[in-house]
Length: 215
View 1: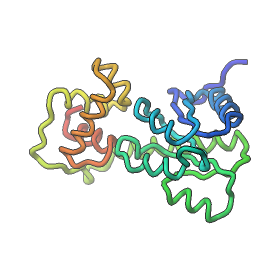
View 2: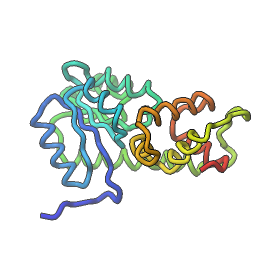
View 3: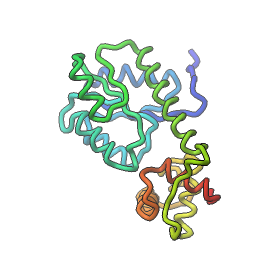
View 4: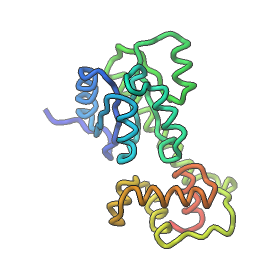
């Protein structure tokens, strides 16, 4: 059977669950639909993965050992390098207060186990499309809503190269490969530029560089 690839560019998903059977089932289903899937058993392991990888979406169980989903998502939302990533919660708890807590913690979607694989795929595709719309709006936004930063911002030659790659939509890992440096070096440059400009995330940094003809 030929793999079905419904997405043009292979999107990378981070799947976190302490149930190995669920991991296998969901990973197999998503990979069949054309996604690249990285897996982790708990939030702590997932945070270590996020230091090396930049997934397009995170699918996360709520109740896990080591670090639960709530704590993990809190870390994701507090880090400017990851706070843009959409998060889909999976949970056996289906009460209204559980869903409200999950969404208030920072998840974008809350799905109750057991779920239909088709529904999961639909939610994944919907979240990815929503993120893409936000990204396009940020990059191609209204000229009256230009991003304002201090006029005296000076970027180093290396920072300029990095921000040009950020504007092209490349992940830190890909930028590191392009510039032949470590991913940690790229992350340091991005962090420095966010500090210099006062911007909040990579999307704003990309839009600012495009608006100022750097990219």
